[in-house]
Length: 595
Image (cartoon, rainbow, N blue to C red; front, side, top):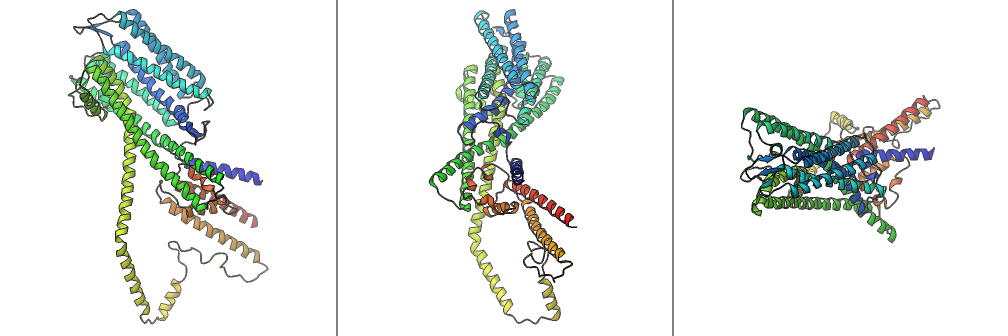
């Protein structure tokens, strides 16, 4: 029975801990790697984010492939389009069908309608064949069907970039499948609901691009591939002005289409930000804390050094503090490196595609990344416009990550600045407060030394105010169980008096817990608890005393709750409420049996 109760308590402890974590525990438990190992983050990224990236590349690659098959690949010097050769067109269609089928299977797998192994094999083989056929199509067409006076259109370059997207999707899924075969995680994608929803909204966005391209190709009288470029510029709110609607119907549909597209894009941005905040950041923090904690714990065990409870607590708090600082620096640095690389690479492609100077390419790319389109520079060539569509769409999650990282960093800096200002102000004003306290103390002494004549009413009032009052932190009951005056021995009601005393003692304890819960409920979610509050928690929820803290290395061991990124006030409140509920049930049951 004791073992059963201990197991139930352990399960309850884990459940409360899971509910207070800043991330989904299943995303960590699913991995066959120690959280403190260097490979943990690698396999976490592969298991979680490779499927998400593939889910975004799949619909976008199909959208680009549709533009590549609808638009003509060749145009002569006079600007007249020429139809594609039948063989080239047929292979292009087969490639598109394979790509769309693979994307559909991936969508079904994300919806848990198709098993992992079957979906992986279909996707890897399907996208490999689609990319291989389209690559052969592009090479053959370039070698045989482009005379000197023919130029490559936007459609040709769409097809060329689609090859890269297909092969990129194949590579990501192949690496994920290799991780499964290596036993690093089970046969499933390590995804949350938000991560699964990203593919759904990306799929909706790709459908929106295809529908908008077909509509504006008729309203503005441009080709389908140029209409896709126009839709991208409109939805991403860049507005380069090189293609504009002229008719009233085109202008009205541009307003409606852009507004609805921005809403869909906003949902994708919100989901991406949610993934970064609820999954990526907390798990990376957990890995850093575990790495440092494991080293400290192993060092203490090897040396035989004994730490006091408060010393071990300060060690784990310092580990958490250093981990937060390092993660902030790493997040800012890595985001800036990716942003600069994305910016410089895009400028390099436009430099060769549009024949602009590299500085002007940097100028153009930077303005596009922050969605400012002056219109003085805009891609004109087929290669430039095709690359712009893919590059601009890929910039959406990048800019979301930058805004999220910079925003969190600035918020943290402002909070630290406010704290430092408050500390500086307190240091500067401490002499003034000290002088004020001395004056108040001197005034109180003078009042006490003054002669007083208490009337009978004053004495009565003094006695009345000396009784306990229900205010602030004063005890609600006049005395505890040890201070209660002994009742007169009575054989008839002796047991009742003992029971009442025990009941009063229990109620006093519960009132103290309720007062603490009320105080915790006013704290902010990110606030931290000190050592005394943690010790008070464990002593309150333990029936056998504070045994959890008997181990001198408890706070740096695997049993420590501070090894996880958790909401500390919420965790404490849940533990106290569960304990309060259990104790009250026992008390009610006991009194019911006695009566």
